[in-house]
Image (tube, rainbow, N blue to C red; front, side, top):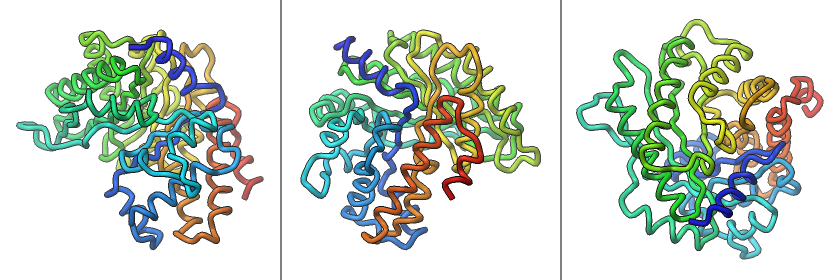
Length: 340
């Protein structure tokens, strides 16, 4: 375990005014997104689309790291340069998704546990050779009648901790992502309760497995109303509740926190991040690790056409710029109108 490399990587991932692009969608997720814009989900189209994002001129101003998928870390640019090598050459840290997806949790109807620990030590060693310097593991926590159960929180927290320990052993910074799902009719108050319980369980497990929080990045859910709840919490309320939970649960020694957008609209994800980052006295930097909220405009513009690449890159650059401003509490809605 190279603690100096871990510290250097973690600091770079949460550098001021930058955030992480989550480009680790599985082939299944890509297929649904590509289908929506009429693009066949072939390996070559996935490579071309990821290449479009990665080669956007100047994107290193706003993007500190990119989470890759197993297929993607083995692919190359049009010029034959491996994606991980290309990104590192721009000062962007390459990362890798290593979990094998959420599967039904035995004896817990409606709940899931993330799998992928078998063989992980060996996979991490290979990914390190391929250029990855951080990894990501996502757990999903559903809110519903009687959910989440203690068993679900416990199982996912311990999987996250075992994954994180293996990452640090391999000199790879772990991103832990215990996502509290937006789906449901629960209130924002209930989301706050569940988010706090989830994070308490996660950090207790990290301590139990000797994981150094100084070399961990949390990819956190925002505390929002369930998407089917009649009262949707406003921007300031979301920011206040989210930061309150984080201050209660996340050690100050942690290098930083990145947020997932979790089904929010592009603008909502930016506005929520901005409101939190503008708060005073935070013990850690807050920034973004968005997938759809960074990529949606680019994908809608590209639609599989080479003639649209430049316009799609412009759309991606704009969203990255807006969120980089939000990570510093400097975003304003009128900046979106100016760019329209």
